[in-house]
Length: 223
Length: 123
Image (tube, rainbow over all chains, first blue to last red; front, side, top):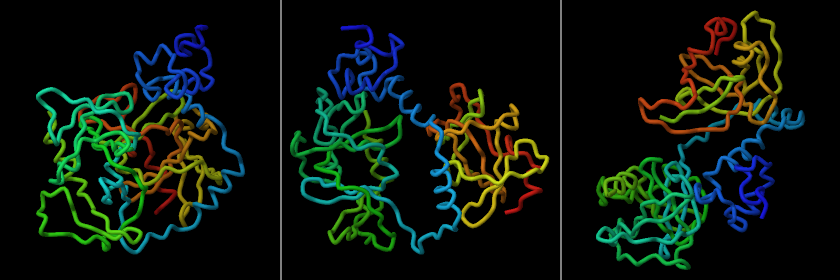
């Protein structure tokens, strides 16, 4: 294997989409994966992304954008938020998109001796870092089942960079806009509950999670 | 605090997102001979005409590179609305209060936009 095939960063050769050849989406032979674990953390990958934006815009693109941004922007009459809708054990949930940092494929969960329980499931490698993995089912006060690949297809990365955590979900449906008027707040749940209320999303009942309390709840549980 | 990173020539900067209302691509600019150093011209934006200030032009005497990463940062502060033409607007990061920005200078709009520009345009 040539030096180029081992690591474009070390050889100084052009990456030539090395992430698809020898990176995490290729053979995995790149020597830099030992240090960076995932191509997302590699300066070669980041630099290639930035290079895409070094191209000059076409005059057609500039004219099209000028036309599009010339007219006044009418704000919708009602305040509405953007929510990520996902499935968890057959139920639909929505969480404000503001606090979702990433949606990733399901990763294996490694339990931590004397620490893991029904709420704190263990550590999970997500985007090249070990993340604290929690059970949303347990936070909702439901019977917790051990998440297994197949039943749970995605992980949601939530929180701030220094206090981020993941929880597995069955599937992610996508982003929707929900007007504030459309949320049925449930006062009986109490202010500290991780559930805010419910709403009808595309004709289906969806449980709306409380963004602030979800972050606080898991942050307070951190080891 | 969320920080939007940008460059002007060889200098790297960061600005809090609080005064940033939008980040938009390069638009067609109508040049303006105003005498204000760095004032590149003006452009139509959402029903009004706002000034475009090129920080690199003000600092180095050459206009910002024409690239997809060169964008217009719409700043709204103290009753003013100004377009800041900035290079390498590709990064948004979070820092805690008191943290140093690696190789970047943290600025506020008043640091970089000259007051004389507001005499020409009123919002």
